[in-house]
Length: 471
Ligand code: EPU
Image (cartoon, rainbow, N blue to C red; front, side):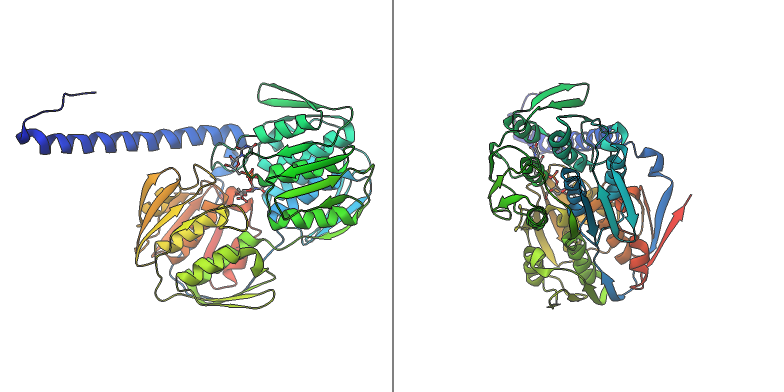
């Protein structure tokens, strides 16, 4: 658009060079605009900016790590179980409960609705004999995506719910169209204004819902909502994550009638009420997978305890292909540091495929493999932007498009001052700091605290030189 293509062969190389300069200018401009957009979105949606620069991690890299690390209860199971507890008037006791920023926020949201919440060491008791409010606190709802799951039980119990558009990690657009469509199918009126929505339903009626795209929280929300709806609900093209089957199993113990959870078709026969009980959360498969990658990068020999290797089969297969030595026991994994890593390409997929939440640490692992690997995050469109930070540390990662990067390795990484953009990218930068030469400073660690309980203390026990500095 700026010039006419020349027909003279003499000018062709100059035109090619000019073309390259233009393309890289626009690529860089696009990148800058993306980050500006993200910062604005982040400010608006998470309101966590006050804490961004307050604490940071300081890491001295290069130490071999050895010893045992225990996996905590699954974040994404805890959030959904805490919300599902609102279906019952009786007490739910949830054990193996991780006290991380996201679960603290959901408990605050629940308490704010007038529900009784008691916190113990890795255990929480929730009793929703009364739900006094049906408007979710705006500031809290903006802090986590999973706040939307509360809409189902609050609607089922009170007939109305009002809430702000949910926040969460800035890893893509994260729309809520499938939630709103699903609620409408239950006979709910949906009104939307000023980033808030309002759901009204005198009575929820069983529905047939086909998810056009596999959605984890969408499946869980519709499954929970259907428990107290009248008649039968059928969810098709449902997500199959282990957190979903675990929740369905416990709901059934409390009197719900759910079959097929863990398969693409879930059937729920509505009941009038459900009871209480004690639920033990499954181990966090993303934490287990992240620690396995850490073992490959920085072990020594690391024993990962209280995990379920069956939940990370795809990752384990990819690690094996990369040449990582792993020994598997019933609830344990032993991982040895890899002397030589092979490049392995990966495409994320819904469970049981390769988890998108494990893509960032796996991408880091590939920076240490000899050769090129293609990383394709098929689920979220902004989950590879963090590779800029790895490049800043010395990696050689080329962005092909928002969903795909090529990692060229091996590259030595160097300590830098970086900002954690989101939860899984954040923990990846911690891992990167642990293998980098020199000192790494990671800011905005609220994002990391959202998903990993006292991570620096647990890593220190493996011999890591990581400190939390509170300003
Ligand atoms: N999507 C829509 N419309 C919707 C809902 C989702 O288009 O109404 C799209 C999303 O934009 C995405 C795809 O569907 O492209 C799948 O999103 P999904 O709904 O499955 O994601 P989620 O339920 O919001 C959960 C986890 C994420 C994890 C994803 C994928 C929770 C609280 N979060 O998110 O975990 O990455 O499933 O497995 O369960 C994390 O823990 O760090 C995290 C981001």
